[in-house]
Every structure is written in structure tokens, then in C-alpha cells.
Amino acid sequence: MAGLALLAACGGAGPQVNETVANVAVTATPEPVATRHVIDDAGLISPQGEASIQARLAALEKNSNRRVLVMTVPSLNGQSIDAASERIGMEKGLSDGVLLLISSGDRQMRLSVGAGAMKLLTDREASHIVEQVMRPDLRASRYEAGIEKGVDRIASELSAAFT
Image 1 (cartoon, rainbow, N blue to C red):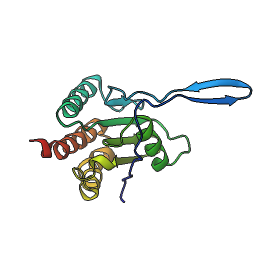
Image 2 (spheres, one colour):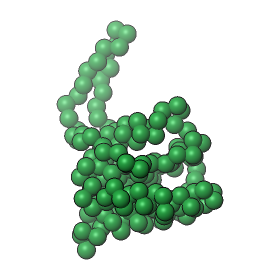
Image 3 (cartoon, rainbow, N blue to C red):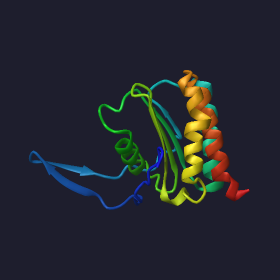
């Protein structure tokens, strides 16, 4: 639905999983939920903008228990944006949160809303944020402005139920 995906629920720190790969035992543990809310690998956001967005989203998480992650990447390396956002959402524990993924080189973005946040941020509103709030700035290469506007709108929708 217009840039949205349901993220499968994933548990917290569960039991360790042991695998044998090429006769070498590998122990994998689930990645803990990170405290970072902005991962700007594509370099689209200034340090000041990143700090501002980080502070806004940390406060939102504290007040609403809804985590939002903004992630920019230079490329999806041939992976679809749908598959990448689902994988990242599961890895980062966003089943009750929101992922805003932007691939600058592929000129794609996706706003993925986890099942636990769908009553607060509907498909219709998420689509509006992507198409009407963010896309005009992103198309004009005003990446930081578009991301900040999107984050403001996402935060507003998620916090409305708690005010």
C-alpha cells in the first residue's frame, strides 16, 4: 500500500542460535534494540539536523513507547526497498514502531509502519507523509528539509494518542 509494509513481530533477546558453517561453529544473538534514531549512511543530513531529529525521536519514544528509525543508505545494492525495509525493521525491533528508509542512489523511499503502530499512523496518513509532505523537498534535493518535515508529521501522529 503506497510505500508501506507490515513488519513482522520479532522478540527481544531470545535464546542463542547455533549454526555450523563450513565446519566452523557460529553463535548468533539477536541485535539489541539500538538507541540511535538516525542512521545517515548516505550523508543526507547535517550533524545539526541529525542531532535535532535524534532528540525529537528520543523524546517521542520516551513519551509514547513508539520507536522511529530514520535510515538513509547510498544504495540498496540490488535489493528491493520492500525487502530491505522488512529486514531492517526486524533487525532493529520495530514491530511496534516506524522505519523511514531512504536510498539516495536508487531514488527510493519507504515509510514502514509496524503492526503495533498502525492504529496511530494509518496507511492513508503514511502515504500522505511520503507523497505530499516529503517528496517535494526530496525531489528538489532538499533532503534534510524533507526528512525533518516527515519526522515532524510522523511524531505528531504517533504522539497524538498520548497528549
